[in-house]
Image (cartoon, rainbow, N blue to C red; front, side):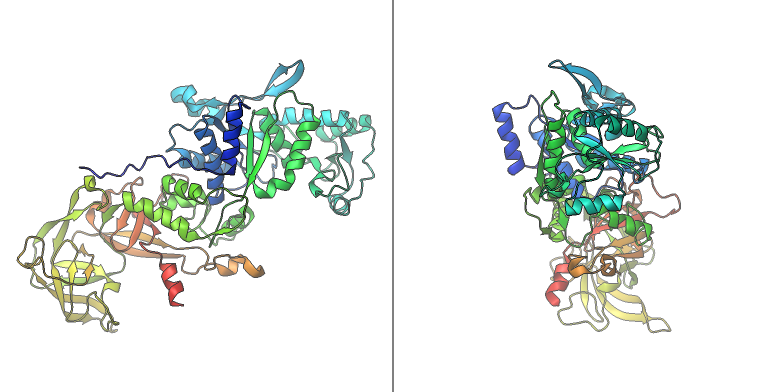
Length: 607
């Protein structure tokens, strides 16, 4: 009877306060279809916090038979780049790829909201298309939604607010505007006539005025307890080319103005965002309700963001790490970016299990990174193929083993999955073992190799250390041992009990590979606690590069496979986050995903 693991099996449907609300709305028949969206700003790479949002937004659409749009909220041309758009698409596709029944909402390339009439009123709408509807040419025919595709409509809505006397052009400097809003004072330009505001706004759009000289502001309440309602900015002048619209515009909507209108134009029912936007919700509602829109309005719901310990998830600070060269790039496997996580060998199944498992609440807290690492180990223990590798080799010569003889021994591919079968590993007179598996002066309860001591070589014989060979500097360079040749499986002494078992590779058959030993990027659980500089808590041992000796079967290692180097940890073939192998490095490179056990917890117990 097979005990094969179904790694694609869906997780049980989660339950939380947002899903409960959606279920209630479905039961009430409030919407014909649930429609969510994942709307990152393309001003950096996605990180582990976004994984929770992706799993929540796409998960709700999946669980309730709806659609989730992928949208770029690209309203700031000076911060956004095509590189970020492409990385976001890769990361989302990777994370939801295993959810075959997920309806990913895209749009036809170049499409913009179409004019329509609803209840006799002029309106706009842009419906999604699904990859499954587009057939084999889906990638060529579709693209994510872009807030910038709605700039014409968003501008029209701004004009409508001016005409209703609900928006005005303000000439104050940014510093004056901030001060007046902070102190609850009205702008001296607040009561400009509608005609003057329309003229000035048209001239702003025509490029007449320099950056920073004028803005369009909503006219709400300068003394509102919620500062976001104190006549917030709706548009600013930016003479900058946009990654998606080029030089077509020199005025750009503020995020808060574009976001709610983008939701409306796409027919979003549930606009789910993190808790810091809770104070923005009254503005979200005010904008939509002030425009007399004919279709049903979206509603915003907030949840607490994911903040794992020993990580930084601020885009601004991640950019600082990248630009300062403190990491190798956005896909550095030490970073919490999805590109880095993927390059480190974490599977989408493990990341989804973690992101869903932490739950959805309104309570902000730091999540112990050990929970994340546990989810990864649980996943990799089931799927990882076992292989022999020596990271810091020391040579062993079996003096009583025939010179020139080689035999092949049976080794298990995965004890968690009997269908994975066995493989052959070569054994010869000269081997490499791990330097840490020998101690000339061993500590108490040391069960590995020592002078005069015995250990079992996994899948092979029991050996005894007879002689230690050193170089002129006194460093151990070679161990001479004898093997109990009857102690392997099927031999007369196979049942002989030895406390220590170590791994090895045949020196004649092993090949060299670069292995990158990654660890946590920060030494502190909360890198910025007590006002400290997060860069001061960088872990100086977060990366060690070694030249390792690997069993020959790993020469055929594929990027899709995950491996457990026995007794050492989980590893994968290095593939940069953009999916393109490094051309400068001819060697096969492996990245350590995690050690087999939580070494940090062990260190904490000692201290």
